Image 1 (tube, helix red, strand yellow):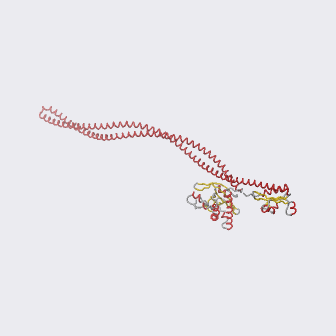
Image 2: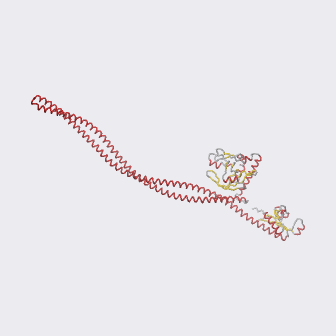
Length: 576
């Protein structure tokens, strides 16, 4: 580590010697040049003896009173070299009585070397502290970003749990309705089963009655057949009566003839013959009427027999059908009984589900309350870590500003250097008339048709495409930790990106978001802070959207780009 003499301290020491002792003293550096003196007019001039001491030709030179008296340019006193860690750092000269100033010079030498040793230790400690705090700052950034991501996920889980709560409550309400419906269904199924039992008994009773009717119909058909046979016999009897009537009528005719022949003696016989004839007529009429009636009855009996046959056939079929009905009723009754049992089981399951849903709902409510409390605490922690994140970023800035070498300072120096180079390049192009200041500071961002994510064009976009890639891509290629190097205007518009991120857009927006980052606006909080800050440099951290749901933690160092005293934007350098 290079140690430099603190000329401010040397000047203060010289002024103390002058004020307290009235002595003239000076500190001389390379080539004997005076860098601090109680006689300020001498600062910048050279001292010949001091030059020889600084070259190592001697370590100390004392001028006696006698030597001073012989020389017009020298005064009594001493010049003494001050060494530190084997190197000559400075020369201290003090004028006065030699026996007095020599001890004083040695005391000063001791004080200077002691102070340098202390400063060296302080510098070493500060450098170590800077390195550690720089690392801690980055770790704090990473922790804060991780906590932020966890908080986001917890918030998402809280939202999902709230939706689950609503679903469980809806399920519980539905289960309540199911249990009520199952109770009603079970009651209905039980009643239906009982009714089926009663109906079965009625069907069985009706089936017995139908069997009796069938038997009666069958028996009636037999009686009708017997009646038909009997009427056939009666018809034969009626025919016999008709025959007898005709014979009787013939006898009556013969008797009338014979009575006529007998004359007076046959009158009584004639009367009998007349009565017999009348009886024969009546018997014939009765026989005809009986025959006519029997013919009608016979036709009716035939129809009855025919209908009886049909009724018997239908009755036989009805017996089979009623038997099938009985079987069906048996099956229905058994099915209803089985259904009632199953409904009862389902009702029990539904009740169990309802009870478990209620328990689960209570457990989810408890979990939701716990998660809500955790989310609140995590939000508080995230807010505190955001402050810590800012502190981490400030630590990185402070260590860089202190000029102490840390892992971050090369990126800070690089960003500042390249921002100055870009500003100078823009000034040269304006001076040559390549474009006007109005073009360079154009804020008319015109959306590129069909781009997704949206890209924009300005009057300086083509210009930056020509002049910036050499600088930006050169920076990116020079360090593997550098992810991107790109200039943005004061509104976060990035006209020209590194070649890796300037691909032509395709049909996939997620792919475009990762690979087509040129001509886009990055006007989020980090982007705008980088674009609009006018401090010598700004250090930020953020998770960069890499597309397809991927994010990467970045440290972002930015430095302002000034063009002829006007703030154009910033050079952003992102690294991991």
